[in-house]
Image (cartoon, rainbow, N blue to C red; front, top):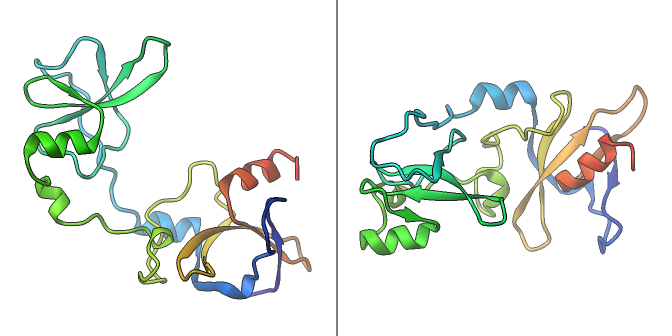
Length: 183
């Protein structure tokens, strides 16, 4: 891997070294080939569904118990709020509420969700990222760097022009600023 120039926010205390990159560098194509299929439930509104809640067609949370639904409710100030609907049509807004009502962890929760390598300080560093970020151009790459405390953090790598060094970004907001031309 070529040496790198680190693009970091001004408030960063140190310029992270690209030498702390660990594991593979992933391309868009490699991530797409290894992605889990999206868990999107059908959007037919069940009979018990509250009239003030619309079905959420986005990827559903992995821990939602069988028979429950994921919806979007408009708040009084017009903002959208994710909610969960039980088989009787009652609304819940937090995972902890659902666990309390069920009196135990859901069946799916007992099998812990596979961790994204960026969230697991002791995970397999060669595990492919679970998804490609929506706002990351497909010609970029993703890698992980080791944090001083030992954890892993996702790094976004911009393609370099011929004879130039790669640009590394530690946060998606910095990628967006770079793409907008403000960096």
